[in-house]
Length: 389
Image (cartoon, rainbow, N blue to C red; front, side, top):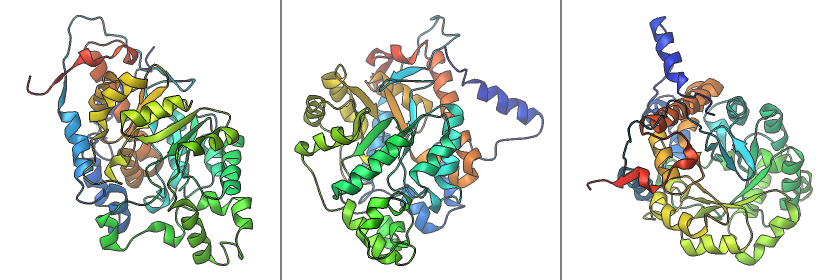
């Protein structure tokens, strides 16, 4: 049954009775504004910014507003079950932490803080290849918590194989391969600041701790940072692979493989035909293609086409428990949450990440019950209606 995530609400009210209120807002649509007050312009824009005019990021939120939950009454939803089995793992809630790189730019504890917070709630943290902390260090901080690894695919097969072997040895159970970022999108927020953290050596802990990558260098990163950075950037950008490249991943990873960035139903069908275990319907939170389709708008068709053959996950625009309910009702098995917990990290380190996650889970739990549902796995499109109907 449910972990009673909704009890976080009572905990907050009781602390308020004792004179203590939350360190920052419980409204996850407002944490961005709070984080802007504590971050430098470069790091803040790197996290918050989108491609081009930002229209794709706006479209993601507008897509959620086009769907409305239709609450049902007298359904016996006093006790609720938020657990779900995703990619062979049973999770207490249909939520994972989306891969976000370069966390050192928002807080000194970086991925270590995030790993501890996620592990405490038994939610998967998806470690980015662009991590500021090594694969092994994050695994140590995660302990017994579930952890997945996200791959930005190096064009050196030996380096790629080495990184994957390290992740598997460190207990990462699922491989999430990001397909939509083989080159950076046009991001005016970063360009106007002239800010790319990788050029400063941020977000490079994975390659810089990799023995095969280091063997490719004339000098160690500690001795010649600019050349090491340039070598790594050239290794993970500029190459758009095709479907014939996928067998390489299966040769080097014996666990579930998920393709992230699917936005067209035909690509979803090809993924299913290629034998991968899951996909993430995602437009990278609007960071790559300006004017792209909202991820939620394509979710129903994709889920209907391939949901019986692989696990369909979703990200891009999730901010509230109601958003999670809508995504699940439209066919997602789980969602990946991104920016809100990064803002929590900026505002309060590990405690900030935990606060954001507990808030989202409480909102999900309470919304599920008050809408008349006893289980997240029972959600269907019948739980929703189009706005304006």
